[in-house]
Each structure stands twice: as structure tokens, then as C-alpha cells.
Image (cartoon, rainbow, N blue to C red; front, side, top):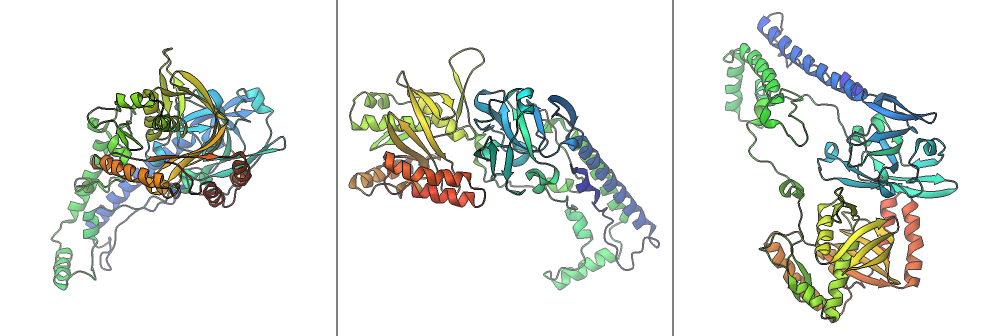
Length: 528
């Protein structure tokens, strides 16, 4: 397997810019400065090389002749079966085959890849999830076809053929190199991509030579956009030795020790992750003090990925308030007990909140009946907890069905299809069979939901009420989304399902085919 160290071997040592008349043989002070800079860069390159060698020597268990043998990351090859234990990093891009959790579930942390600290859920295919021993794995044979290596970390398509049956697997079954296994005792995986074919390294670039503002200004000769007088002034400053060369030597030494101080700064230590600051280059130390603003589009950075269900709008009624920490409005349950058309709408909304998601419930280890909801999005977990607070509790997920306790009675709801959220669709949908009826539940941005509603006077009135309530929520800074439902006949679903299944198994242009199939299944017939 190619090593990460190879990427750093070609790094060039920065020796500065030599003017035509600045020959180091004639200026020993220049040569001294360059030598010190070179030694510092060599020292930092050696540190990077040692870090690369350390990574390539990480231990990993590989299945050899039916036995788990401990080897190093650099020994991993495509097609190997490997075992990863809890809190360990993945050495390559893997296909999740099975895990210690029910239905082949696994929880991973991708903070090394995208900065997200909330856990993401991966699930093995049901045809491989039962292989939980090395003996079963050693007799396992299959043909895997997947797309060529690419740098897109959120996209992946492949097919696996087992005993003549072909199944599609995608990003939900792919474990990326650099991610970490969490809250899962172990997983078995098949190696798909290694080394520089892995998505992590395909997104990494050659480390650029970084220069601070002082270095840039010192090497400054002429800026065509600058004024003539400024150029003349700069000329006299640079060429009349008004800046002693020893200042550059002093700066290099100060930067070197500043980097050591940063690495050992106790105030930069994080107890939760047991990690400290790492100064990968010392050339930009003085730039840190000039940072005034940090611009971020990640709302999770501001909210710490903590989401709570606060309010809900159903028909003309607006439930909840802004004072309580979470949703608390007894009027909702009072309206459910009336048994009219509005109460049916409330139950439908609570069911959608409890079913239209990819959340996985877990019971606490203390033996109580309390549930922990593991989700890839804090929004989904908040909605499921909100439904549970109103006595519609999602408590069991199986490969093709979920079990929801609705006002004290368990209801089994069959999951026929799941259409994932994408930035283009701006919505997520599930098709379920509930009490013999096929329903299409969808949730997403109000703009895409409104344009898919039935064009009736009732829908127009509901949109007016909903828009008024959404504006109220927005004034308090709440994150909002809309739910809609559509009932499908067996004939409609029978015509649409084969087209969608065909798109699911496609490798080329899969995203486009899925989007087209999903759009064909959602004409303007939804009810808000």
C-alpha cells in the first residue's frame, strides 16, 4: 500500500529569494540566515516523516487462513477482510459487512474528515450482517463492483453479488479511512480502496510552503498595483540595510520556540478528546494574533449540535411556546382526544415525526426502558424525541419495518422505500405500509413542500396558516421544516417501485436516475 510519507518526501526546503547581487558567498550573514531557516524546515519535515511512519505502522487485524493476524496499516491490500475494534481508526475505505450491534449497525465519528463530532450511522446489508464469526467470514465469497476512486466523500455506488443475487451498497455501507469507530465493540469490513486511492488521501494536497506576512514583505520587490512613491520607499528600505539581517534569524528562532509553546499550552488542551494543539508549521505563528473574525456556515458549530423540539403547527392551530426549554403544550393531547378530523391530522403528524427518519433507538445499559436515539442528524433525533414526549414512541427498528408505540399500543409499520435527503431535492421521504395503506411521508424545506401540495382551496388555506406560523418561528431563530403525506394505491406503487429499484442498482449516473425516479413518484398530490 502506498504510504503517506511518500507525499512529504518531495517537499522542497525554502531558502528564500536571492537578489541578483545577494550572493551568500559575499554576504555571510545572509548565508547564516538561510542555513538557520533551512535547518528549521528540515526539522519540521523530519517531524512530518516520523508522523507518517507512525500512522503506517498502526496495528490492524487481518483475516489470514481463518485466523485474525495482527499486521500494520501498510500491509492492508484491496480484498482483505479486517476487524476494527471500538475507538479505532479505519486504515482504508471499507465495505461494512457486519458488526457487534443488531442488524449490522455501526456508529462512526468523522471529525478527522469533515469536523463533525456527532456520530453517523452505518448499516451493513442484511445478506452480510449475519456473518459475526471468523469462520463464517473465511468461507464468504462474493464479487464486488464499484466506481473508480473519487474524492467525493458523500457519494459512493457499488454492487455486491452473492450466490447469484446482486445488491446495491452505497455511502451508508462505506467506512472511510480516517474515521473512527465509536460505541460499537467491533466491525468486520472488506477493503475497497487503500493508500492514495482512499477518499481521504485523494482530498489531501501537497503541503504548501507557508510564509508569514513579514517574510512576504521582506521579499517584496515591486507591486504593479502599488504607487510609485511606495515602491521607491520600499526600495530604499530594502536596499540600504535599514532592517538588520539578524532580525530574520531572531524571528526564525522565536517562531521555533513559539511552536513548542503552542504544543504544550495547557489552555489549548481538550479533556473530552484528550488532545492538544499541534503546530504543523511555525512560519505562521505571528499571523494568529491578527485573526479578528471567524466566518462559519456550520450551524452545528454555534448550537453544539444540540437540537430540541419546541413548537408545531397543525392546520390553523399553533402549539407550543417560546418560554419552555422543550415542547410543552397540553392542548395538543386535549385536541387528540376530541376524535375529529383535526385530531386525525395530529396523530398523522406525530407518526411522521416518529417514522420519517433514519434514527436507530437503543436502550440504556442501566436496564431501564429509557431510549437513546442515535442519529446522523441532531434534527431527526429532536423530532423523534418530540413525538415520544407526546406518547408516540419509536422504539424498535428492523431491516424492513419499525415498531411505534402509539398512545400505549404497538403498531408495526412496514418500510417499503427510503428516499434520502439531498441538497437538490431539499427533502427526505419514506414509503410505508401502515394498516394496509401505502403512504408516502416527506419532510423538508417549506418551498419544495408547498409546490407539491394539492391545488385545492383547503391546501391554499393550510399554506396561509402554515406560512404565518413559519414567519413567527423564524422571528425567534428556530430551524423549521414541513411535513406532508400522500396516499398511494397498490397500482401506483407497483408502477413506480421497479423504476426506483433499477435506479438504486445503477452505478453510472446513479444520483441523476434516483432524482428522476423520486420526482416521478411525487406529483402535486400531497396533503400538508
